[in-house]
Length: 275
Image (tube, rainbow, N blue to C red; front, top):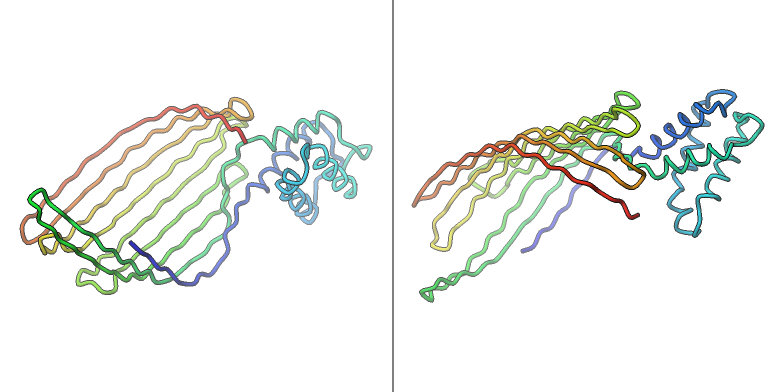
């Protein structure tokens, strides 16, 4: 099997987790009355830029937390927002709590894309009666996609994805669709919820080993919910519930069939983060 892709896109999407880290940190130390005043927009961006370098500190230094928060202190002190020009020891611990929190991705921005995709494959078949056959196929597609993410509030975030694939060299101009919508809400400091809606449809046109042209279509859609409880810095307990439905259709010169099913599932998991 081989696949070749090419195209172009417009827009920019970023993960804003570091911004949420800064906001969470400021919220924690503000509660300890360490600030003389609120940060301005430019001062907030300066602090975000320093927080964004956390991985660089971790790679270059064995015990990086001390040096990291020393630079955070220097940054805050240069802004003149700290009482007595220093952070208390408890404020450092607050910062370590934020760094160890498992904040989910927060996607901000939008982008669209358009391109071409070429797929080709070869296969061989041998039955128990020593019958042997070889086949192959090639497909060209127009592929389009879009992504959008934004915050509704400090605790609520929306993220949506959509993609479409349309065959070029096919008599059946049936497009494949893949769409999802996610709503993330932080209920409290240790509890987060996610609701996700999804819809996926794909088609396939091919020749069987007996030169019988066939066409099949599948559709899957549903809703899922996830509740995450942060027990400790590295330990999470998750409860997920999902309701889904799938439909299928198969048609050829020899036979045709339809299928459908519904599912309701739940999952419980306990996760430990080593790194």
